[in-house]
Length: 281
Image 1 (cartoon, rainbow, N blue to C red):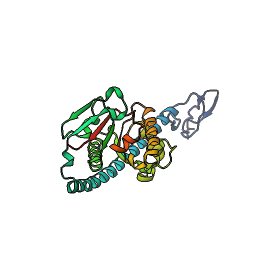
Image 2 (image 1 turned 30 degrees about the horizontal axis):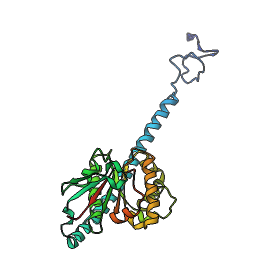
Image 3 (image 1 turned 180 degrees about the vertical axis):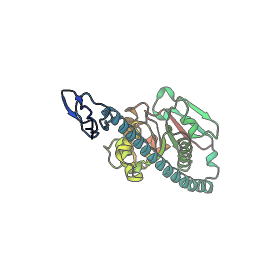
């Protein structure tokens, strides 16, 4: 019987360290710089920056999704509130003041304390607050004034309704939110902090999210009931509102107040750009 010819062993170089092994050995773990085709492939982890990039994208997607959900939820709540209040307001106005919603309106810039702009500009009877708010010279900062029963609340609600429609059609548009200034209890509390607290209390929005929305102008505050504070506190609140708008020239907002109380308050909303007044014929 012929002795089977043995095949020569082959050196497997592995950098500094190497050893000899049988050619049929397919499971040898080899370390070093040089590997041959017999070495089993090992999983090479992705570079750190690739993994971080993947996680960052996932985190941003999740964050954007959460922000979108919060916005939709808030917009739905505001729309429901505005719809219910507007129905009640329209019913009451039709019952008590009949056609007051179609009375002539005028824009008075003297009300915002600018002596050089005291000219009253008559507006067509059906001019909406939305039209005035979007005027270039008003630029999203508006004061709504009127006597009791003149339709101030209805006007504010109609404005909110128009802004809700705009926000539904355009994700970049701010969400309008009605805030009752009668809930402003701390005379020293800045308006931005109060708005954040109100969003948490009424709409259960996390404070960090609310702060981000304010910073990015993703909400448009509609401040109602300034006259309900009483003259002394009304003056303090006006000062805080002026400070709020002074902090950022891109901030937009609307304030609603009775005409007589506003005039008695002396301190004016100088950081608003126009006053939209409701008057009897």
